[in-house]
Amino acid sequence: MQMEQNNSRPANGLISRGETPLNLEMPFSSLDQFITPNEQFYVRCHFPIPEIDDAAWRLKIEGAVESPAEWSLADLRQMANHTIPATMECAGNGRSFLEPKVKGVEWDLGAVGNAEWTGVWLRDVLARAGAKGDAIEVILEGADKGPIKEPPRPPGEIRYARSVPMAKARGDVLLAFAMNGEPLTPAHGFPLRAVVPGWFGMASVKWLERVIVTSVPFNGYYQSIDYTYWEQRNGLPTLVPLAEMRVKAQIARPHIGEIVAADAEYRIHGAAWGGESDVAKVEVSDDDGASWHPAALLSEPVKNAWRFWEFRWNTPAHSGDYTLIARATDSVGTTQPARRVAEYGSYMINHLLPIRVQVR
Image (cartoon, rainbow, N blue to C red; front, side):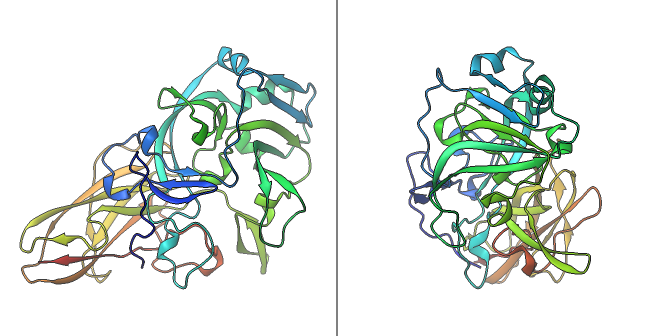
């Protein structure tokens, strides 16, 4: 377990995890709103934020389609618009808890947020272009680009790109131009980004410029080398791309190292989320997992959005160090694993995360 570190704060109160490229996280202990304000929403960049002229910008759709096309932002706004809530979590959120240390941005718990996104369905764009019957994936490519620093790496600069299977693309993937009722900011993908509900944030490509329909699997860098994990398939270890988020509960308060009054009632609270399944139950332990107590879920489930919870803790009468843990179970019965899944590497940190506090 790691304490928060590198806690330099920009003016908006976010924690800086790097300036080149820009990476910012929300102090998770400040969690208090179902919808995360835009200025508090975490920022994940792989390359410098591109400068885009929205008047000249076009979204191109090409590949295995009957009618390749280009659309301006005005064209997309004239199509049927939809607004959906969706929780987005960086696949490395919680990486500072991993032992031993691993490479990657040292996120604590705040590389996650919940917003209302407005845009057009990807499926409507695909229908207008006439995706061909043999298409199996849709590649989403952003305008951000740069060289990969560590091997194995492709030569020169690459653009950030990820793909989604055709079934997902024809489902609930949104091409969003607004966030919480406001136009996207440059840090959040202006003028257009993908929002892939239920999936880790790496799939929600920002600064979107190209949609490429393909009849063969996409093996780009961020699809086949980075943002991958090991999985046993047919008895063989197979490297597969990250996709759906894992069920998870996080404690917002108390935060790590907080001093809590003895022999009193303390409101432990936080949020829980999963992938494409709802959160059905949250439990809390105040004795490092030896026993568990049901937490109260504070609202009805909202599809693809986190769920707030609380537990009224009667703190011990005696001073000492105590370990708090929260765990979630989703609507299909999947519960967070007690221990780290080694095959996940430096991603999908959804095992039980202890929060040690002092009672005085």
